[in-house]
Length: 236
Image (cartoon, rainbow, N blue to C red; front, side, top):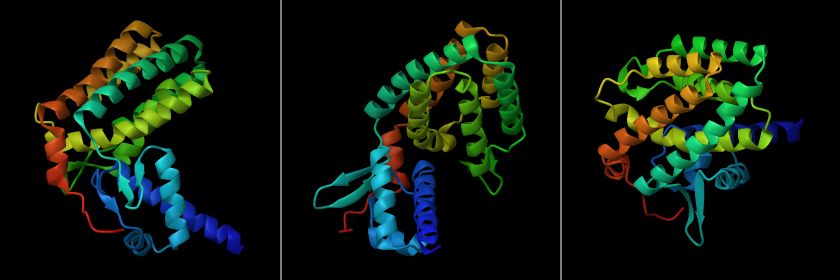
């Protein structure tokens, strides 16, 4: 039982730290002070080190020799590269799901869209922030969109790329001043997938990803992220 309890604490610390990184509650590029994280999540030094090791392997944390750990920084170059690769992998997954997806896949996709469309996108008390509940529903929709594909490798790549892009999506929320209708974008993608129109679905998902990237680049995302929370340079 003690071993199970320790595992649960370690897993909980990993999940909480990962959520904070993806939501940019820990600013990209910030130094991750191990003792502060132990206090924040009420877990042991070993639990935090294991969580950081896992997050390093996922590409959300970087380990710097003699300096400890840091949240992976963001940059325009990384965003462009990530968007390009994500479009390629998502397109492969989507085409495959449309080609071989079953009626059960369609049902999961419709259910995921229904949940997303019924969940408020912004935090009621702070409309400049994305609601965590909507972020969860959004992730579930994009996962359901491709989970009809029969390639575990493609789906693993898809999940990894989605996680990396989530930090950028969160940062784009307060920068979107053009009245973008994300709900309509999702509806159109859903309709194309259900009609088994792979070419249209791929064109729409490409436009969907590219719109977020354009918002961030136009807004000088590197400068914005620095203003949101400058990395601290003290020792871990």
